[in-house]
Amino acid sequence: MAITADILERKTTHFVLWRPRTTASAPQLFIGQLHPGNPPTFIPHQNPFVMTSIAGLTGLWAIAGTACGLIFSATLAGHHARAQVA
Image (cartoon, rainbow, N blue to C red; front, side):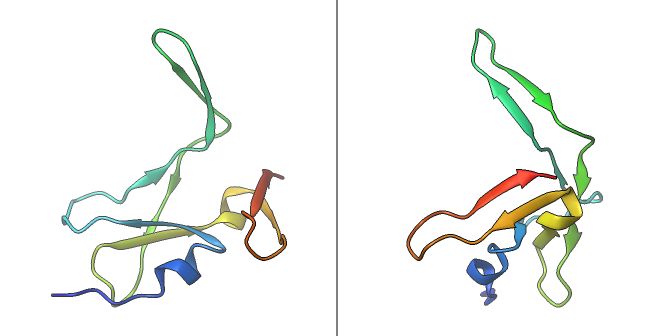
């Protein structure tokens, strides 16, 4: 079964995950900094955010950047969008 969704459009304002395998728990999003080293360490900025499933699209999960305390700024066409912690 093919999934047709506007994933690229959703990614402009949301973190999107396609997880085709059904699991009992929702995926979580961790936002933080990765510090190089041996071993590398991850320092989270805040608690993980629980993603929600997209209605009608099995396996597609998302969470709005604003729900994570991020502020998005528009950039010129062809450039990457920036997000910063509010």
